[in-house]
Image (cartoon, rainbow, N blue to C red):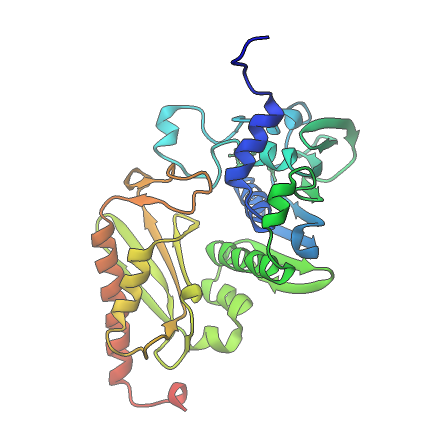
Length: 338
Ligand code: ADP
Ligand code: MG
């Protein structure tokens, strides 16, 4: 037999899963982002044992046509980009066509999906092997159930931390996704306990209330700024409302929450010397930019985005934060300082 051989689909999917599906929270993120890309207005996430036993995501989005359900689980199969031009103007959260095949290669997956005016489809896949496929009566939208994550990849299972840690990763990701999409109603339930609920009425402050509580949301201040390339809008806390970690800062760029050290620093720098050492504000900053200024194709998880003119964007954010805090200082102590 030849020494060099092409790997099987299942194996290449498992290798891809190593990059895209690190932990239960990655499954939640990928499935929920798919639901968002499918124009859903209501997305419900049910989990058991911090997602290791079960992650179920139900949406009311476009659904998948009966003759394409299997294809959706094929590597590099996507409905979101078709050409090189599209790659440089990404408007969806997904585009690599890797999530579903990756997840299905390291778990037991079943899907029920239907497009409008058609009867739906049920399909099951276990460890990358296609199981039963049959017509299924269901309403428009999709439910995907992922069970026994990493059951066939013991090395990855060993790497999983405590259930508490995995659960807080899931909550963190769901909070940030919900903040990125005030127009969608999200629910997160862990073994019957509701951990997140947002109204989905399009209002960012009300969405912040769903995530951080009404009192905190009410006290946060609106910031706005723009130049020819970027539009920045969001809410920040005053220096009297801080946290011991940077985790309460959320940056949203064209509907995608991102990690960006320089922009985080720009927010904090906007406070000047008003923050105590080791304390950080709460902030939700929504940035709109021409997709031509962005390169999302940096890492499979798409958490990092390369931004042209990042420095200018940082200055825009910092000055918006500083301006609001200056205004607040001039207002005599009111209810906020009680
Ligand atoms: P990508 O999101 O990068 O396109 P995925 O593997 O995550 O790749 O999904 C493959 C395809 O399956 C998507 O392009 C989309 O057409 C379809 N799909 C996945 N999830 C859903 C969903 N919840 N509703 C409708 N279509 C979906
Ligand atoms: Mg996807």
